[in-house]
Length: 273
Image (cartoon, rainbow, N blue to C red; front, side, top):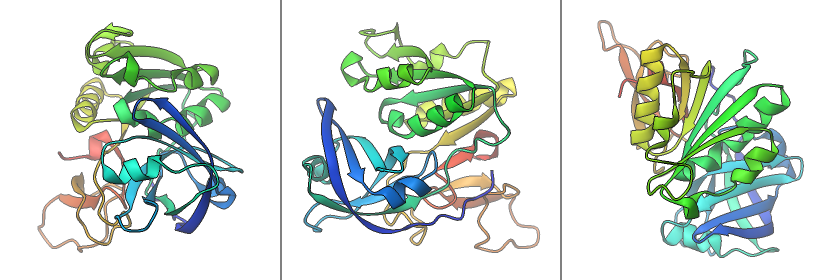
């Protein structure tokens, strides 16, 4: 996929609403119309916790429109805990949109979206865009238990077909979400979730000759590609391969790509992990 020219900049966005979707899972809607208009499916923002005393944290953009953006996230530490406490009317400092998202060109007609846990936060926008373009969208949604399944109804309302798996069998099938991928694979797979799940999706897609785009989960230090702390091996001939460091004669056909800058979404067949 071609890398995007990201119109990223700093914003101060007002919290329009806050909802706790499940224990430890928060949905914040932010009044940021300029940001909402330029955000593409699969991009993220770096959000500074209130007070400015903690480092910014990367959060995937859940929804975006002319009114602003929404962030759906799991509270996993002190930084996300501070952000989760924000209430309507308070301001958050953020930078975005960042990264390269999902490539929805080519008018795909049959798409499978695989989401594991917090990965659900990055796949609503592509699902909505595909459904509004008339595509069939199947969401394969996995979580630890029924308590960790959030926003499933939103995807149903958009016309997505749902297949659910939970580790404990409390909802849907018992087991891994990748077990739901049967012989009748869609022509294109999009996936976001834990690395083991993404590796399994990529391996299955490559074995079956199906094109797949994987949104990698990573802890970002800067989020803008300056520190090179979030690299992943990528085929040098990929359109997303960075120009730096320059290729050397007789060098490797694998380069290090930054998940925050060249990604977070990569074609599975181009990853060399």
